[in-house]
Length: 149
Ligand code: GDP
Ligand code: MG
Image (cartoon, rainbow, N blue to C red; front, side, top):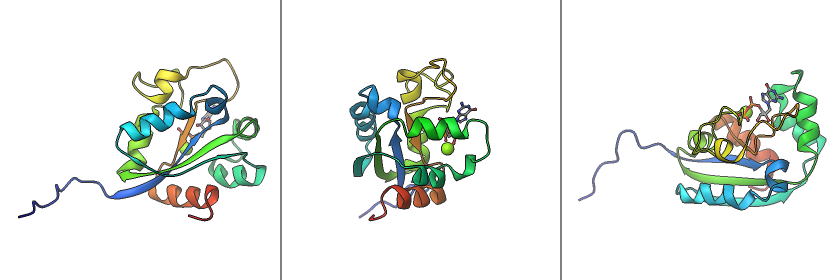
């Protein structure tokens, strides 16, 4: 006999994770991948990429016009980014939870940003990682960073 699934079991889904240029520069790519895998998510694609202005304009379209937009884009152009597609039950909110609050100074201990990041006194929040915030964002962002997937 097979047991019925728990009613709360989240669907298997995919999310886009980025180890931003600060994370790659600080040698934390492996640590981020380790935390994703240790949580039980599966790596579907991993690629080191140099972002372009066009890619970032699409990726960060929702933030266009905000005061931190141009510094954010310049920061994201400052070096390679590790782009990752991770898969698992509830991985979209799950990775956001692993990442912690946007401001690394406020992010809780135990999270990637809380454990590894802080406010470095720079204008842009160099907060190590990005994670898609919804099913729609994940599909859009995976399409941008991995057109072949
Ligand atoms: P996320 O989804 O937690 O990454 O946060 P958002 O989507 O709101 O913002 C995108 C990115 O812009 C963040 O990860 C930060 O790098 C940067 N950012 C967001 N809010 C601010 C802000 O108020 N000031 C600055 N300087 N950067 C910000
Ligand atoms: Mg966001």
